[in-house]
Image (cartoon, rainbow, N blue to C red; front, top):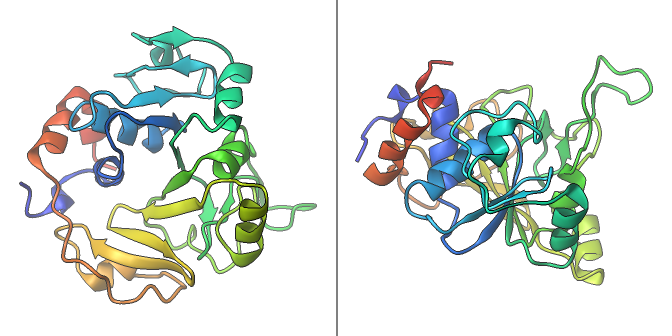
Length: 251
């Protein structure tokens, strides 16, 4: 057990904390970057039968090298099946994928995600890559885990553009009417875990080594005082980092 998670890199802290939320024998639609790292750590530790699915069409894989895109060769390494985007998004729409992992440039209190623009859509400061498969994943998975580095610019009252819908009242009604999944259930940062309530994100607990003040620093929302003690990462997850050595690099 680790008593001070600050010795881990920022990305490693996010990945191990998110990996705790992944359950064995489930299927997981995985985004590129830290979401992929989290899924790999879960599969290398407590969830060996977790099926990782990428939007390029790869099913049942375990990439040991960081992927630059869903088409990177490392994604296909040692996979159970290589299909295409049509197939995996068909599986998603049919309700055969249990959970999704996504990141973005901005997130608001109800888990709406922005990966499209910073600033007004018509004249943005930054125009990003956009949705890719993120919108479909956010709408169709039964449960969504959001992964975000702790950066005040990313946590906003209102995202500049809703690329992927969250769990506010309007979208919840649409999810119920269309028999869709719940949407975002947890927000993982490199300092804490938050869960979705009817009032938006609330603090579950800080990661061990971080105080309440550090876990909630610069968040524009009322996240409460937390319902659990500090989250301690078990040895299985810490040992799994050895298989992904790039996670040990300092950020």
